[in-house]
Length: 214
Length: 214
Image (tube, rainbow over all chains, first blue to last red):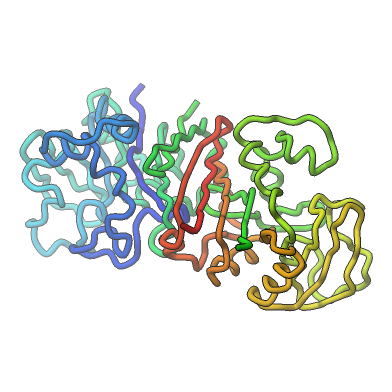
């Protein structure tokens, strides 16, 4: 059975997955790069940039599981880009350059659908105005039996969790207090009852928590 | 130099240190006992109850550090008891029975001072209406050069952290989503910059985080 997975989703110890004041220059607002410092040095992230090398310790081992077996991604429009409201044109094609690291169909949830965009390397962005259930149906069909990744941002992950559509959630808890921004956990009281929880801390001080449907 | 320490302070992954709906029958509100399940089996907790036995693994090792070198505790009135407003009488002497586990002077912060209460085993409750700085001055004097523990609840810990009076903070992050209650981290943006952070996860799934002033 095709599973629904969230990977490498970083939050501060006070639960914020992004800071306040997001903009093209600051995709995570006042959080800057602090939520993802653990991720940047990994071989997994360097590969996403098309670069060789990178660390191969426990952080990388955990990060690397984001890719295998995934046949499609669903992301919120706020992950796709910093623009809000109707698209002025179709110029914006994501943060990731001509060859995005997904290499699968990617369904972007938006109230303003626009034509699909085929990128290099197998990534195609589809823009759909759909419920989580309907988006998942389309993504599953496109994934051809493989798993579907929910790529973020926080409101998208929260929505799929609230609808009990997620089978595997990996959260990296970073020991910083962001104070403001968008929280992952809001409205998810009792979430742990639906999952088996595991935690492991890596030397950088990050706690990798996985919530897996038993 | 006498240090100020917080120990065994449990929060949910969404940052709540107590649930909603606190009452005499439910000191932690709807959280019930879920924030402290890791703590109850430890030898440290069993000793606090005056009982023999208990687990002696990593959770206990970390929990056990709460006591040594501490000469006084400061706690908020909401930790001392469930009563709010002026005392109707002096009958309430804490949750802990005739021989509380502190065995030192304990300063209870309240806007309604009342006479000190000497308990068995060396615990004396003093009731003071004081700023964090003034409470700490009194507690340090009573501690005779030893450390001062800030015992909770969340608003008291938060207040001492906000005033930058804490030298060592141990938080046990429990993998549950409480959803509502009182948060530890509110108003403490950037807290980590004043501390060296360490994390370790124990097999029960709790992450013990320590923030220590370098």
